[in-house]
Amino acid sequence: MFHFEDAMYRLATFWLKTWLEPNWQAGTFLFSQGSDPCVGMDDEPTVIHTNLPTLAPANWLDFRAYMSDLARQGRQDELWSIWSRVAEITHLPAPSPSITDFDFLGSKVPVRRIVCTQAGCDRCGRARGGYQFPFLGPWSKSAAIVEEPELGPAVAFAAYDRCREVLAEDRLWDASSGLELQDMLTATFARVLYQAEINDLHGAAHPSVDDVFRAWRTWQQGQRAWRDPLLLPEPTPNQARANEVHRAHRSMLLWLRWAADPAGRSMPAVCVDCGGSGDFVHQILQSAMCRDCLQARVAMASRPLSDSGSGSESD
Image (cartoon, rainbow, N blue to C red; front, side, top):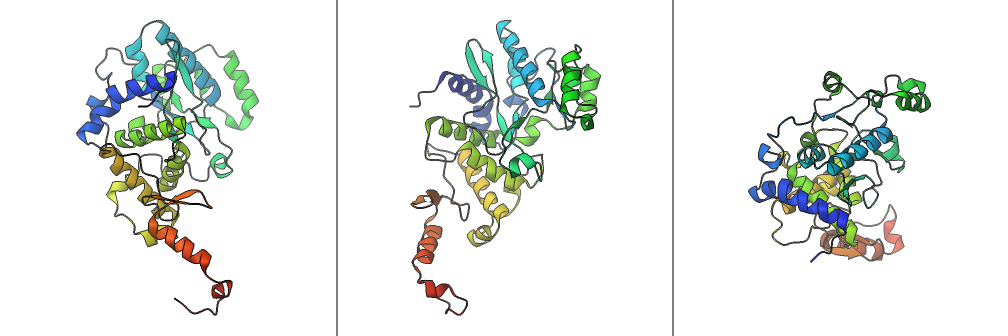
């Protein structure tokens, strides 16, 4: 039995009981209205995702303060309604544990994380890390949207410091990308991310958040909305060994099938060469591998150096 740290305990309790578990038990791969514990609440706050440039750190700090105020005021329906519709967009490498949280009755509740899928992202490409928070709501100042990004961050932050107005409802909708969190993250894959967070928390020898994020980012191929791995034929191991997108596809399928029906099984590690189930560990690479890929690596390493020349006979 896991001994959760307080922050993860509160996250797990709410997340599993009110949001993930109903979908998981039903075997659905998509969000449903019944999965949101706050659907139908009176005066549900407007929360939108935007593609416009925003001051992520400042917007995040205002969000954090707003959520903590809701908790102190006992407005838990509004708090969880907002929580269920936002996420941190994480650049690679993913830190562990999550760095974004807010205070809830004396505990720190993490905000869910999804990976940055932007093609050619400099932060992910250079392993600079960091995060985005492109969600706007009743906590957001009007200056959270950077109207003239070409003027640089100093000008934007100065305008933000002077700003005292929150974004009006019509301005929120004007800024909306049209995407919601459920368009980017399915309930079943959220189960995968949840287990990866637990793996990181306990140092388990199973996929980390960073492992899952790297496969997910590769699979999305720059697409922000969820790209369903179940809609395309599963690549063969040989195809996956030669192509990183095929390899990520196999990993995503493996995790999704596990999350839909875990049946008491641990979340599977994936083979670094073919993306299939990695039941063995390469002692030098310290990476999970399937039997076939491990045997191929061992056979390659044991071949005489003379066999690696262009004139060597084929096996």
